[in-house]
Image 1 (cartoon, rainbow, N blue to C red):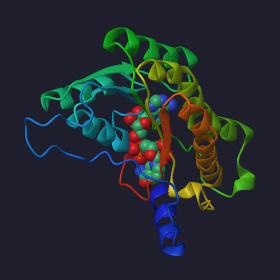
Image 2 (image 1 turned 45 degrees about the vertical axis):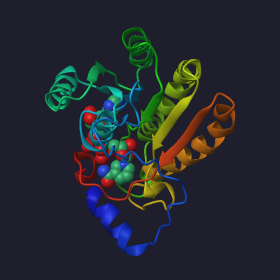
Image 3 (image 1 turned 60 degrees about the vertical axis):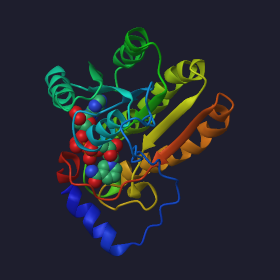
Image 4 (image 1 turned 30 degrees about the vertical axis):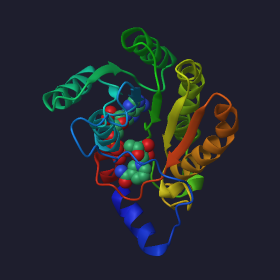
Length: 229
Ligand SMILES: NC(=O)c1ccc[n+]([C@@H]2O[C@H](COP(=O)([O-])OP(=O)(O)OC[C@H]3O[C@@H](n4cnc5c(N)ncnc54)[C@H](O)[C@@H]3O)[C@@H](O)[C@H]2O)c1
């Protein structure tokens, strides 16, 4: 369903991605060369599957220690096992981004176990409803904004002082093409993704003073469980 919604939208609109994308794909030309993220610690939320898992893998291939996380321990364990079998330096923690205690644990445990944090990739996002925007219930609206917008902000608030302590780093939000052009049947989700664009711009000046870059990436349709809906 979700994938059809995206596909229809892609056919109908030519959307220009106005935000700069972070390039995770630099690779070393020799084994001796230092990898771009060597010595760095990255947290990626919702990273046991889909886009988050791919981002986690690429950051680890580029030399970072990556802390994988999502809601269920067995998913975290499986994802960590896969990336460890590729000789990548990863660990995992359960974190439902909507739970304050899980967010706090993710950050505090990472600082304790890995010595600090250099990067946050705020990837968790959800959409519980399909249909005309005026049919969206208050419960669904609150849930969408709690997970897609508020959780990313709360994680940023908690993680920024730790990144600053390391001399600076990077925060990346995962928004969507739907953030630029609301998709009719997933309009509340689309508005939450537009809010992330605003959040990225609002955070950037203050975080710049802490030597922290704040960017967002806006994927088009990517074949994942989420886009199958
Ligand atoms: N797939 C697409 O076409 C597409 C397009 C644009 C944007 N996005 C965005 O990309 C991000 C990732 O989507 P995906 O397609 O990779 O999804 P996915 O369903 O493949 O993976 C989502 C991951 O999020 C985890 N997750 C879900 N809710 C969570 C929560 N509350 N706390 C922690 N983890 C949670 C799941 O366990 C899973 O590991 C989302 O923010 C989504 O809005 C996806």
